[in-house]
Length: 397
Image (cartoon, rainbow, N blue to C red):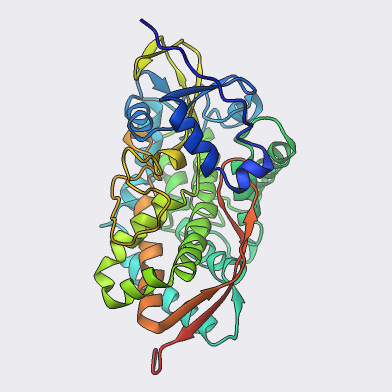
C-alpha cells in the first residue's frame, strides 16, 4: 500500500527561506520522509536515513538526467562529472581523484599550513577585518588556483563565477539567469586563459589535458572537468571557512573548549560541516519506479536531496541546532556519499584543519560582529563578517 506524500507549499528558493532555511527543513522532516513541493514539481527528501539511501542508490536515483532544477542548466552541464552516471562518471572521476586523496596531498598540506599561519598572523595584527573578504575568500583561491595551475594574474573573477554556477542549479529566477551567464564567462575563461599552454606543467589542470592526449577521456570533456573543479573547489571552501570563524566567534565556550583540548579539532571541523553545509541540496531523477521509506516514486520524478536538512535531523543528531565541538558527526552528509561523494573533500578538510590549527596556535580570542548572509539558490554562506582576532602574547615570535 502506497503512502500518501504530504505537500509543502513553502518556496525553498525564496530569499527569506534561503536566509534561514532550517525551520522550513525541520517542518518538512516532521511532515514525512518524502515531501512534495508542487511549486517546482519535485519531491524533497530531508531526513538523514532517506537522504543517505538516495545517495547510495545510484542505480535508481541517477545523475545523468541532470542534478539541477531547470532544463537549461542541466543541458549546459550535461557533459559534467556531477551530471554523469557510470561508466562515464568513473572515467571522468579517475582523471584527478588520485591526486585529491590525503596521501597525494601531503606535500600540498605543508604549503597550505604555512599559508594559513601567515594569513592568521597578518589579520591578527589589525584592529578588525572582514573574515569573508579579507580572509576566507583569499585562502581557497590561492590554494585551488595553484593546484589547477592557473595564471596568477587572471584569478580575480573565479569566486564570482563559482557563486554564479551554484545559483544556476536553481529553478528559473533572477539568480539562476545570472548564474547561467557566469557559467558562460567561466567557460570562456577556460577556453582563452586556462588553456593547456598557460596552465602550470605538472598541475591538476595540465593533467586533465594529458588524460585527453592519452586517450583516457575525450577532448571535449576537458572544459567541463576544469569547470567542475574550479567551481566546487572555490566557493564551498570559502563558505565553510567563513562558517567556522562565525561559529567559533559566536560560541566562546566552544572556542575555550578547543583551546583547552586542541585534539578536538577534527571533531569541531566535522561539526562545522554538519551545521553549515556549503551546498545545501542537489537533485537526482528516479530511473524507474522505486520505493523509498514506503513511498512510491515514479520513474522520471525529480528528487531534491537536501543534505543540509539531513545534517540537522533530530533522528540522527540529538539537539541538532546546537553547535557542539565534542559531537564529532563523522557521518555528516555535507560531502555527499556513494559514487558522487565530493572528490575534493580531503583538500577541504586539510584547508579547514590548517586554518583551525593556526587559529588555536596563535589566538587568544575570536570576536565576530553581525554577519551578512549571501543569498544563493544552492550555496549557504556569508558575504561579510566583521571579526577581530586577539593574538596570544608571544604568538608567532
